[in-house]
Length: 269
Length: 164
Image 1 (cartoon, rainbow over the protein chains, first blue to last red):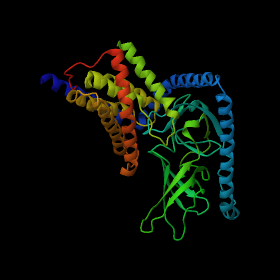
Image 2: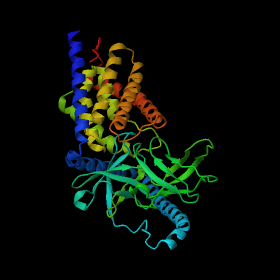
Image 3: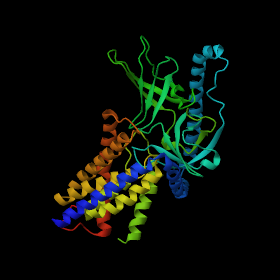
Image 4: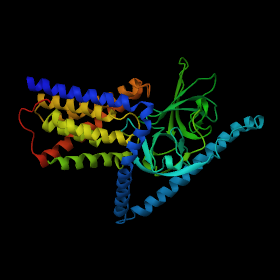
C-alpha cells in the first residue's frame, strides 16, 4: 500500500513538474530560448529526412517507381500551378472593380520570399506542423506567412538561427480568415481531422458553389490578402443558422510538401 | 533492454514520427508510434516503467512541434498511467488494444485541454471527437503490435504487474 502511494506521488510529482514547464515555456521572455532549443534538434530531423529520402530513392531503383513518381510529381506540380492560376483569375475578376477604385491597392502577390526545405513534420494529428531549414539568420520571424505556388501553407510560429517551426492550415489550432471568390462570402477556415472546415457568415441569397476557391481575406491582418487556401467541395446551407458550414480541399498536400516559400516582407499587424 | 538501447529506440521512434509518419495523408488518422511504444512499455512492465519513455519521448516530440514545451510529455505521462492501471487490472492480451485506445484518448484529451486552457485554441466537441476517435483507432491497432514485438525481444510481462 505504501509502495502504491509512493508511486502515485511520483506520477503526481512528474505531472506537476511538467505542468510548470508548460506554463513557464509559454512566457514571452522564454520564446527565444524555446526556439533555440527546438533548433538544436533540427539537424537530427534534417538527417533523418535525408535518410528517408535516400531510402525511398534506393528502393525506387528496383522498378519503374522512380519514373512514375517523377511523372506524378511533375503532373502534380503542373496541376497545382494551373489550379492556382484558376484561383487567381477568378479572384482577378472579382477584384478588378475594387482595384480600379483604389489605386493604393496593396497587391496580394509580389512579396519578397525566401525558399526553404521541409526537414520534419509534426508528431501527431494534434500538431500538423512543419520544420523548415531557414531561420532567423535568413530573416525569418514568427508570424510570417508560408506558402507554395499552389497556395497557403501556414505561418511561422517559432524561429531558431537556422530552422523554424511552421503551423500549417491543417493544424486543428489554426484559424484563417478567408473569402470565397465567386460568391464573395467570408468566413474562418480551420484545420483538423479530414478536410478544412470553413465557418461562413451567411448573406441573403448567396451560396457557395463547389469548385469555388477560398482566398485569404486579409481581415485581421494575419495573412496577405489573396492567397489561395483551398477549393470548396461542400457547402452546407442552414437557413436557421447564424453560421453556414463549408468544406474545403486544401490547396496543398502536407504529405507532398518538400519545399515552401516564406513571405519575409509581411508581418501580422 | 539497456538504458542506451531504450534511448535509441525512443529517439528513433520520434524521428520516424517527425519524418516518415508525418508524410501520411492528413485526412486520415495519423498513427503515433511513440504513444504506442509508451503504452506497450506500461502494459508489459507497469506504469512506472512507462514513465521514463513518456518523459523522454514526450520532451523530444515537444521539440519537433510548435506550442508549449512539456505538453506531449504530460500527455504521454497520463497515457502511461492509464495503460499501467489497465495492465494491473487485466491479464488477457485482448485488453492490450483497449489500453492503446484508452491511452490515446487521454493523450489527445490532455493535449486539447492544454491548448484550450492556455488559450491557444477554442476546442469544440465537433473538432475534438474525430481527432480523439482517429487517435484511439490507430493506437488500438498499433499498440498490440508494439507489445508483441517488445515481448518477443524483452520477455513476457510478469504475473501480478504493479499499476505504477
